[in-house]
Length: 74
Image (cartoon, rainbow, N blue to C red):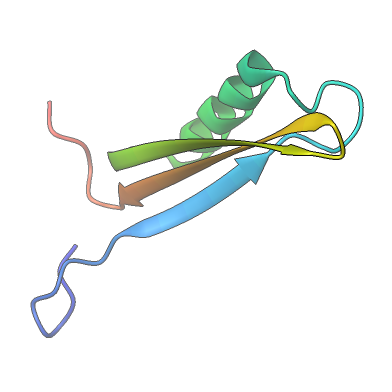
């Protein structure tokens, strides 16, 4: 989606697992991100980043999804 000035507008959201048991569960985080994308509807995903950091001796995982509200190309 282009702004009035012609610049491309990209939206994003980030998600992490809740701290505690299961916070390092990559598959659970992927499912949560997939559920969030389903809730957004028909969007074009531009990029997805994955970050893992050890905090307090446990894996702290974060995923960020960059997307455009325009319907995806088919």
